[in-house]
Amino acid sequence: MRKTAGPVTIIDTNPPYRGCQWDDNQATYLFFPAFISFLLVLVASLSDPIIHGLSIVDVNAHGNGTISFGTWGWCSHHIPGVTDDCSSYSAFGASRQSQLAQLPESVQTFAEISTAVPGSYLIASGIMHIIACLAVWLTTIWSLAASGSWHSKEQHAWEWTRWAFAGTFWSALFILIAWALDIGEIARVHSKVDHAGGTRPTVTPGPAIWMMMVAFMLNLVTFIVRVSWLKFKPRPQWTVPGVGGDFHNAIHPPMSAVLPQLDEKPPTWSVLSGSNYDRAYETRGSLSLDEPAVVDEKFAIKQPGFAV
Image 1 (cartoon, rainbow, N blue to C red):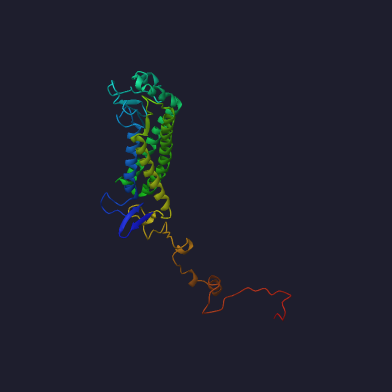
Image 2: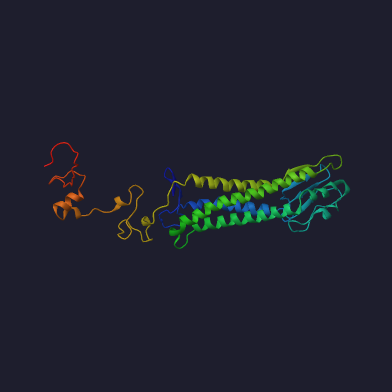
């Protein structure tokens, strides 16, 4: 599998060894989007209250403060009479209503928000975030294995790269599911908020939503590029020095992409030995310069004319 842009090799599954670690392997370039996607999904999964300010949904009460909800809990910001605080770390399905009920009366509507998202929904969202992290991590490991300078990498680079590109598809799928669950949480919270202090709170997506979207797009674009390059075949092993392959390998003759297998056999002198009949049989269908080919003909009885 090889892709070039002029004199520059963009992608090559099994390139020739050039005496350096940077060998233009396609997984070398795949490592960067895979690693960036892994960091985005990992950080987005560690939202409030683990990482303050990194939330899935923000509820702004316009002068009465803001509540940010994350995967593991919530954080309050700029609420009058209350210092900025975050909930304790809890399981995915733990209820948040008891902690939110301790907020001032002006923002008691926040306590009702927790009932909008059931515990089973939070558990499903948390599990999908973990699965998405594992999928992107495996993709990153496979791309690193195919692009690094390892022993016997030439024989396995194409297979490892294929696994890495397949991992981009599954990573994009799991990230999409986790992202959809986060967006569904925003819709549920928006339908539950009520007027607080005469003003309806504003529900907006948090930074974690955009991070998951970018991670999904990275994996999707990488997989689409891989599908568009399916017509490029891996480099044959018999052309790779050090793998036992050679142009003059008598045990396993080379197989090119132009000629079929039967045309790859070297010429022989068998047609120049033997009797005239053998040579005529071997050259049947061609023009003979020595003697006419012996052809066995059977005349039909109904054939007009005389048969001598």
